[in-house]
Each structure stands twice: as C-alpha cells, then as structure tokens.
Image (tube, rainbow, N blue to C red; front, side, top):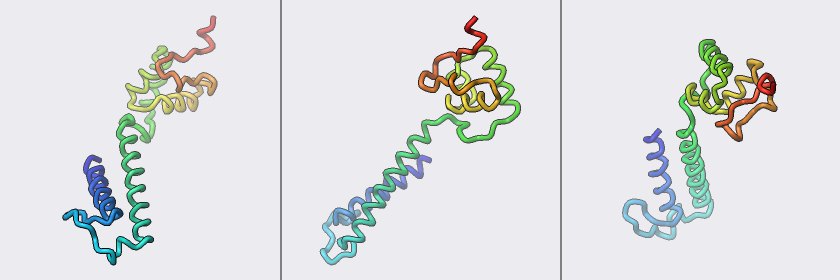
Length: 136
C-alpha cells in the first residue's frame, strides 16, 4: 500500500504543477498556448488532484483498520466469540483479539442472538456489555 501511496503523491505533484502552468521537471512556466492552459484540461487535472487526495485519505483510513476487517467469520472464530462474550470480556478486548472493529463484534453478537441492538456500546468500546442477568 505504501507504493500506491507514493504513486498517488508523485501523480498529485505532477498534476498540481501542470494545473499551475509549471513544467513538473524543470519548474519553468509552460507556454500560453500549451494544452494544459485550456480551461477544460485545467479543470480535468484539478479534478484528478482532488480524486487523488480522496483516494489517499481513504488509504490512510484503511491502514488504521484491524487486520480482519471484511473477512468472513469462521465457525471456530464465532465459537471463540461466544466464549469470550460469555466470560464477560469487554467488546474492545474481544475486537482486538479478533482483529475486528467494535461494531463488527457487536453486529456478529447480534446475529448470534447474544446482543440486542439497545445493548450496543460502540460509542464507549471499553465498556462491558450489561446483560439482563447482570441486573440481579
């Protein structure tokens, strides 16, 4: 992913220079009759710069996600989830052990019938889910 990020940055630098009417290698001003000085071409390059910025931001966010994001759940992983949840582990701890987000753990617990939607704690991932039997 680092290579892709570098490619985006190089492309952005080149396009930004061209949008400003500057030769990307020499730093010289491009002639007025250069194609990059045409308004539609300039707008297209500015749009490409914006798209590269958005893709770079998406890559940066993706790099922050846990390793198992988007992967299918195995029966073994679901069984571990059941065990950890029944042992009253915090959702954040379970998420870290599984390499998944807090929201993914809560969604899977809901699917397994172990958590009700009103029990979600995604806004406070370090919290321990309060189950009905805990209120005794």
